[in-house]
Length: 164
Image 1 (cartoon, one colour):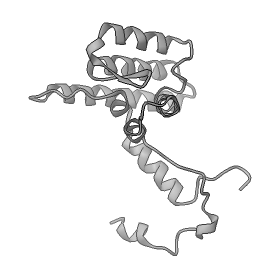
Image 2: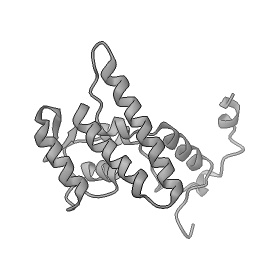
Image 3: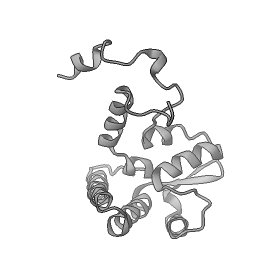
Image 4: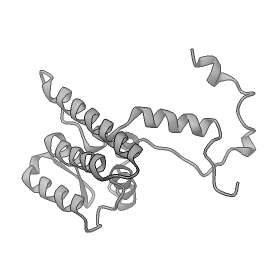
């Protein structure tokens, strides 16, 4: 159905009008790109939690505590770590639950609540398989609808640098 819509060249802006500096990467893609460098990890971490891994805040304190509680559910990535399975679920679900309760504006709280419900469902399904699968923080945070709409907006030329 969408093949004709997206295959038309006439509907897209001229190639010299498309900003070259805008790049989109899903949380899963950012996770797959982790190479042990601090820069790659910080980009990934900010996409998940909207803060840096070194910031002093409740989320990072909780995340470190969960890592200590579940050392076998922590994977080293350079000098940092990612969480998997129950450890990842506890941190990610708590983060989205906090956003659903205290985020602003109300539309964002509604979005965070829906994301929390999806994260709970995704975790339960992954753990109920005959051979349970431990999802990572990035996999739990993944929002395919967001990925689709961002890519659509980029391809439509609706995202650009201010002043362009």
